[in-house]
Image 1 (cartoon, rainbow, N blue to C red):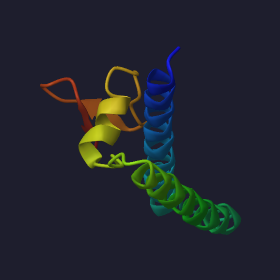
Image 2: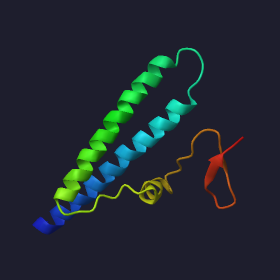
Image 3: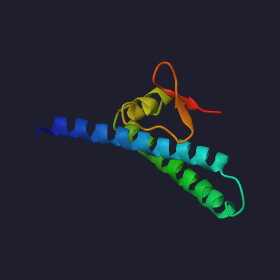
Image 4: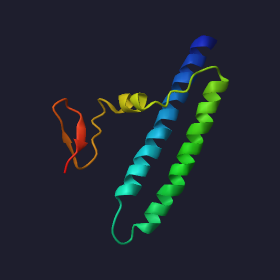
Amino acid sequence: MTRQSARAGMNDELQRELRDLLCLAVDGDHTRWVLSGEGTAELTEWLSEAIAGWRAWADKVARYLADRGVAPDGRARSLAKDLHGTGFRPAGSAPTRRGSSWPAG
């Protein structure tokens, strides 16, 4: 493996890590918003702290990529592209005509 290909591989891994952290934050926000009922306060508080941590780590990874001369890619399109084809579909979602999902209800 050449030094250049190793660097490119590391950049790709950092981009995936950035998108994973951002997805965790988005999914965590969603979960926090839909929690209801007794006994959810502790989980809501934990999620709030975890989300802040995931966003902080995403910011650090993005800055590191930028320092390496790589444009960090945390666009919504890139996050959705990572999920496409994984079979991920949140509970309560229903298929649409295009095969994507939309919350049922």
